[in-house]
Image (tube, rainbow, N blue to C red):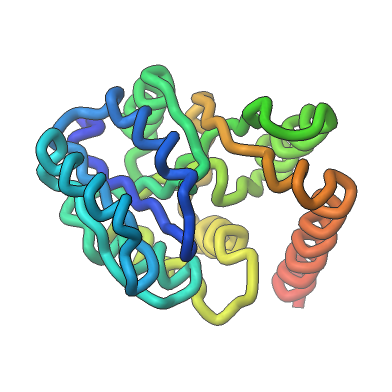
Length: 232
């Protein structure tokens, strides 16, 4: 039976990232044998460094892996460092509950060789318009079967690298490209029906229309290119 003990959680960090301070509050839902790997810049933040030391007292397998690479490189390096059979990728501004873990375990046991993701809910720290983003995210992932990385991908480590890992030679959308490759290679993409919450502060700071429009344009361009490539 697959449980949270069999999973390594990979959390990529940007320089100056501090959203992890809220995320670690949810570690109380984890087993103390869960592997927790932060992957970030070569210069480790002093606060995170001391926090990792504290975490190791309760979660002995928690640690910080340094790299100067972009997000895809951080995700891949974190996964390579993992000793567990499954890897679960979370953004630093993600939040999860006890039920999130329960649904993940249930989904993994039902489809152990699939790429699993969660439904996304936005925290109330951004614009009221975020309900539109939640709806479009649900439709995109459930109807088009194209979840994004902030929906918490989880899959077997060996399957991840049989797919080539997260593509590192792209400016954006490494998560979308991984999903595309998974489907191309016959790896099922399954929703756990659990929920991951994420911050919507960026939409408040940079403007809902601006951020939503930019992300939609990038995603549409990439998906259109992949569809054209497939037809050719």
